[in-house]
Length: 161
Image (cartoon, rainbow, N blue to C red; front, side, top):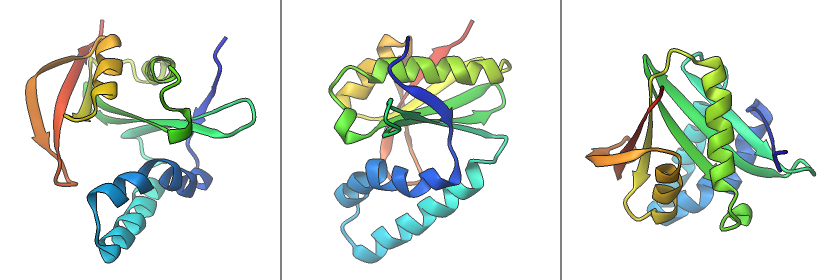
């Protein structure tokens, strides 16, 4: 029995996700207040568009008291999907990431049988995420990409059966 409930993201989750997941990242990498405000606005617009898109699956995890625990998102690119998971900082370092990743992959693949590969873009410094994805069968083959945020990510790939 899973410790967490998984559901599709809805518009009411947008601000909760920003405060619990993205705010610390924005404050760490973007020091200019106008830039931070622009990112917040872009965040809201991006999620409003993507929660109803056929090219994305975004899931929210909650505990038994309906507290926000994590989010998993999948961007579908033909036979490949980019996966990202984010844990609320209050639920990190408790061993939940593996369950959240696994449960989200299972749910995603039930609805997207045409996907043959999963990709995870991970910052080099994020050792914990690397271990979680490697434990889930993802491999790093020295591929890197600079993404829209200007940061360089390592690309981990999992081939599906």
